[in-house]
Length: 455
Image (tube, rainbow, N blue to C red):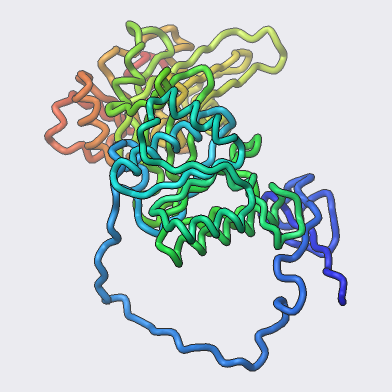
């Protein structure tokens, strides 16, 4: 019998090679190559030969099909992120930092879906059944008709699901699953890939919705090969800071709804509670106007969200000033500082710069550029922005202010929360029904001169 050929797989990108190396040639990551065994070693890996396959039925683009049915669990924030509810036969991958509340969220979701009429099975590979029951008791979910199991053997789990035929199965977590036909340790690239493939294929064939929990790496990405994210229909990240009670469920991929949609939750003693108006929550502890404090009107998915940006600029005792950022891109902060110095003549050399997004929120859209610049200038000049003003706009390298999308939704959300004025780029489509006093700026130099009397 021929000996199975060894291959080496990168855990970051899934690329394979015939020899080991310290650095992956495909993605450039270091120390991610591990020994692996082909999933189909032996006769199954040979070519298809001359056997003729069946003809596939083809359709055209004009074929009309009814939209997939959805089941809502009653947790509005979760239903929003899923695109309007759970689709039968869908595969969902949920990732997040350890201890952030993934198991709590999914146990609450399992109870809600079960109470909504979906037969639900919760399979835990990390905890014993007694531990899950204790959490359910703490959350007040002991009366929910959820069936529970503690198992890691993939073959036994799929046999049970095939016999019970639930409408929803939750697997916590995919890294603990063990397939006996794969010659690797649990948690390895081969095991994670094989388990994800078997479960997603099973979900499609049987019409069972499957939710997989995934661990994340220190960089915040879901551990294991990236091919797992391509297999599933929806990828959700559960984010939050340990020091804050807010948790954000973010969709980064969704075949049945909009991506980049968010759901906001608050961690309480009784579990996760929904936050219907996240803007009011993120601004609830905002004090009187202070230097360095600016309210940014952002968009997360389809939802407008107002958050407070806080900046602190102080003389640096070190030869290399510090640039510390929480909740925003540090590279984009460096760009804003360079534009302020090159286009407006405002230097930040010899000054430590600290930037924080209040409430543990993470912002990625370029529309926050102008709000960040306003916070930095406010802190540097010790001048406060009016408390009833929101700021948004993208800054180009030339210093010009570029308009951003969904301006009207941003302004309506600001008006709803009591703001009376806004600062936005000149070419922004503000509409006529916002009711706010809008001060439009064409470039950063004019903004600095009009708002701070400098430049």
